[in-house]
Each structure stands twice: as C-alpha cells, then as structure tokens.
Length: 112
Length: 112
Image (cartoon, each protein chain N blue to C red):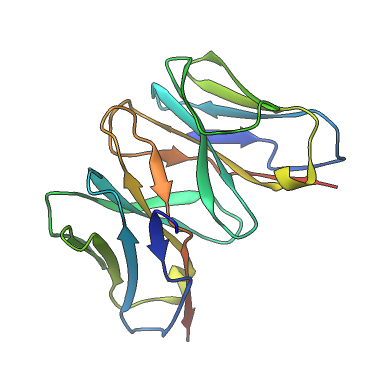
C-alpha cells in the first residue's frame, strides 16, 4: 500500500550502460516529478510531468529521458551512464497546484 | 549563491529545543516547506506554511516566517534522538505547478 514506490532501490552499473528507474504512485495525483540528490545531499528538480505531459525540464542532459505511460507512472531512462550520474534519484507526486509533494523512497544509483 | 540557504549542521542534547534556520531569495514564493530525511530513507513532509502567515504550530514543531527578511525557521521542542535526521527547507515559486527548490539540508544530531 506504498503511496509512491520506486524500483529498484539500489542500482550499480558500469559507465556507458543504459538503465531505467521506475516510479508508480497510487494516490491519484496528476503531477509527478524526478529529483536528483547528489553526494552532498543537494536535492534538485529534474523533470515534472502533468497528466503524462512534460511541463518542466531543468537543464538535464538529453541522456535522461523520462517517460510517462499513464498518470500513475513516471519512469526515468538514462543512456550512456557517466560517473557523475551517481546519486539518489527521488520520484514524487502531488495534485496539480496543491501544496504537498509525496516522495518515494529513492533509488541509489552508483556508476562504476 | 544558492537560492535557499541553510546551515549544514546542528547538534543538541535530548530534551533541548532545536532551531533550524533557512533563508530564501524569491519574494514570490507562495509556500515554504520543511522536509525530514532519515538515513537511507526518502523525504517526509513535516509541515508547510503559506507565505501570508507568520507562524504555524503543529505539536512539537513551530514554524516562524519573516517574509520581510525572507527567513524561515523550524523549532522542535523537547528534541528526541529519533529527531536526528537531515532537515530540508524548500520554497514553492509558482502557483501553477508546484516545483520545489530545496536548500542543502541541515543535519540535526541529537545526543542523549
């Protein structure tokens, strides 16, 4: 009954590989987000989708491609992984224009 | 400099009050938030305050907002060891899509 879930929780991979992180929310929210938290704990918005449409893309390299097959899912695909992509990636969701965002547990990506 | 700034570390003894401070730069911010992140976990929304309010109290938590100085604080009364975590201040800048801009987080360490 987890509200916002992400898979996998941990992901270790080699440089140059392509990987995906999945996010699902069962809260009925219209808006979903991806945030990146770096090694210094700095948390920054990457993307935001509203009703399956991209509304915010914050200067993220085009190696990162979010995909929203439906309102409840927002997946993140990363091509040609680099060392600097190592971070914890958080998915979040919230009602459009509302005050709260609910965060998933995070996916710790380590690129070797 | 960062748009949302926080001191990085705070250490208190169990039973004392903790005060975590935050400054932000965007006067158009509509809502300001405090999130808690325990080790290895996702972000948990603690509380938020609308920008036309000065204070909000929720059990052991008191949020003070000085809009003139763009200063936000979180006071935790009777701090417990379970309060040890990283606390993030965040601002919401536009009313359409609730993108949050986070500070770098304040690590609160509560010692017995």
